[in-house]
Image (cartoon, rainbow, N blue to C red; front, side, top):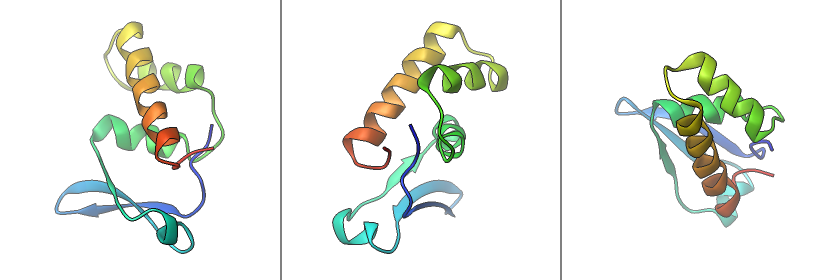
Length: 87
């Protein structure tokens, strides 16, 4: 999975916000607020990776259980795919 081209993250008021740019802005008229973990995963998925690779990356970066990391990655990727942010 990989974040589609046409989306960027900007820091607004101290928060990370993913927004569409260019052609993506014509079909997606919203934004997604990213917490620290969400921003980490967003940056990770700017390159092609599997959910397993993302889970392993979370485990290296944060002090969480494997179960929590798997659950968080699954929830995040479902949101990305459902909203057309990833392919």
